[in-house]
Amino acid sequence: MQIMSAATISDRLAKKARRIMADCRVSFFNTLPNSYGKSFKCLQRVITVSSANDAGEASEKAKREFERLEGVPNWKCHAQFLQVESRPIL
Image (cartoon, rainbow, N blue to C red; front, top):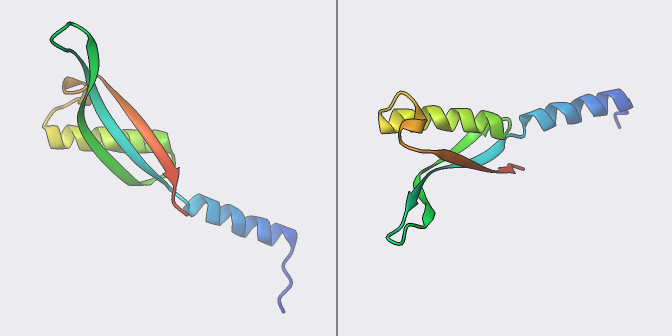
């Protein structure tokens, strides 16, 4: 039986935690008026990012992918805001 120090166990857990990445769903929206003049959120596109360390990184990767798919230099040309939903991959 191998005996490991607390520091070794802690290092292994830290490395494992860094490998766990967030699976994020990034939704791009516009706010548009309906026929009564009331604003509503209109979904433009959803991009799933599986290789991000956190929601911020996922957001940036999704913005670049959105720009590529839409053929625009800036994602705000085709969307007004975005929402990020994330959950850890275990």
